[in-house]
Length: 179
Image (cartoon, rainbow, N blue to C red):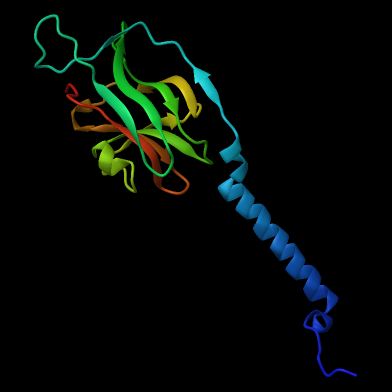
């Protein structure tokens, strides 16, 4: 006869059941938090460009319209496309994401950041970042209204940001923002 005792043979059934419930609860919480199925899904959005004029820096000459935007650089996830600010005929300002392609995530939002894209895409949005809303889709063209009265002069980039994990998926510089 062996003197060896198995560990499972010594754990009472109530403890085993409690450990199983705890493990299933932890697994459920982990699935909720990380939402790994999002790595396999795509949400495509194709919003029309508002009837707009691309905003120009105040120093642009008469008849000159300089784009206020740039291409995305990747952060924690491969991200491509462009971001630009446009002004529809009603005088509002809209952040337009065009040909966006990034990963889906559990809580991804769009921000204007006071930091340049090279910094904002990493691990901080900077002081005074402005949330424009949840990312509508990880692929395509989409518009985000900038709140009326926002002073755009301090914002340097548009950022796709995972709020839950505080990481940037990607960012695009916004150059020559008007006041």
